[in-house]
Amino acid sequence: MTTPARPPLPEKAADTSAEHPWPVRLLSMKIGEYVEKMSVLWVEGQVVQLNRRPGARTAFITLRDPDVDMSLSCSVHVNALDAMPGPLAEGARVVLQAKPSFWTQRGSLVLDARQIRPVGVGELLARLEYLKRHLAQEGLFDRDRKRPLPFLPRRIGLVCGRASAAEKDVVENARRRWPSAVFEIRPVAVQGANAVAEVTAALAELDAHPEVDVIVIARGGGGVEDLLPFSNESLLRAVAAATTPVVSAIGHDVDTPLLDLVADHRASTPTDAAKAVVPDADAERRGLEAAGARARRALAGRLHHERRRLTELTSRPVLADKGAFVRVQRDVVTALRGRAHHRVEALVHRQRDQVAHLRAQARALSPQSTLDRGYAVVSTAAETVVTDPADLTPDQMLHIRVARGDFGARVVGSGA
Image 1 (cartoon, helix red, strand yellow):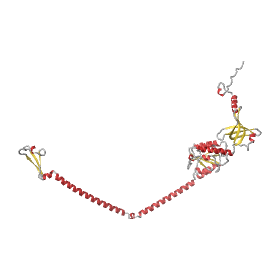
Image 2 (image 1 turned 45 degrees about the horizontal axis):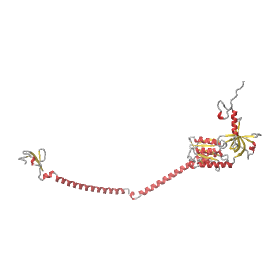
Image 3 (image 1 turned 90 degrees about the horizontal axis):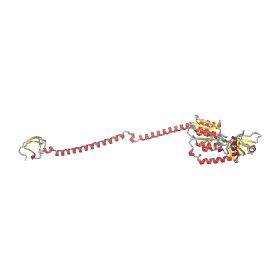
Image 4 (image 1 turned 120 degrees about the vertical axis):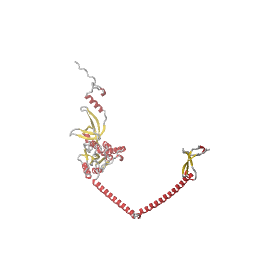
């Protein structure tokens, strides 16, 4: 009985399927072939682990990216290590020439290092200078984006080394100035491969704390390589993006990591940072006492000035005899009253004369005055005034009114 022939394996990865998969060995070989086509290259990183066994001709290095948590394994001949100007130590920054290689049996990518060179201080400083110019062009160092520090923070965030002298300097000096200062401390690695990641995480945690009003990043002095994490671009951008004011207290007065330029306040030392984040209680008390004394002196001087002015005013003749002004005004009122009385009397007299004149005119023009001159008013019984004798009839009764009374009369004869 013959075994049925297996179908041929797909040539390309895109041709594989659930019914026609690649075996692991084939995929591993394909990856190895692809990696093998890569050329020799130079790569920079930080040595976080070095494994060199006595008598072995090959050493193994774990090379980590200084900015993010990524690493690669490297194999290097001991002759390349011995050719270095000094012994290679963990934490050193190096550049190495390597050929990527894929180990098919373990399915891991390894760099086959040919040469290793340490990154010198001069080269590091040149890179920092380039990064400094780049960030300055973006405006991360501008004064107008820096936030003022609070006068008295509720809580002080502190990012520092574990049980470090920097932590002691900041806490003790701050509480010496303001005994009730409250700290929120985050101990982290301040040098080495994990420094950037830990400092950045602690900064983000304190920035999100609702009661932390200022954050201090502190570290003691050290060499250029020791302070490199505080010139790391990712950390600098995290500080620039923080909403809480940040104080940089790295190293000594002569140390100038780029964090000093991005932070909202630069302290020359951790002790100087303590002076920046809290006021001096004794100085504030003395200031209050001095302000109170100045206020009392100012008030006493004002009272003295006003009292002197009041004395000058009361010593004037018009105020020396307090009744003089009243008497003068009384005379003025009396004179005005007399003039008003005379004017009213004159007006009354004129109006009285005018009334008498109008009364005489009225009398002269009244019907009674006409009757007094001998005239009479003749009217009928119906009180109709007789103006024409033709309107009368014989025996018609008439009413006649004279100056001193009236009487009746009867018409005799014809009215015509």
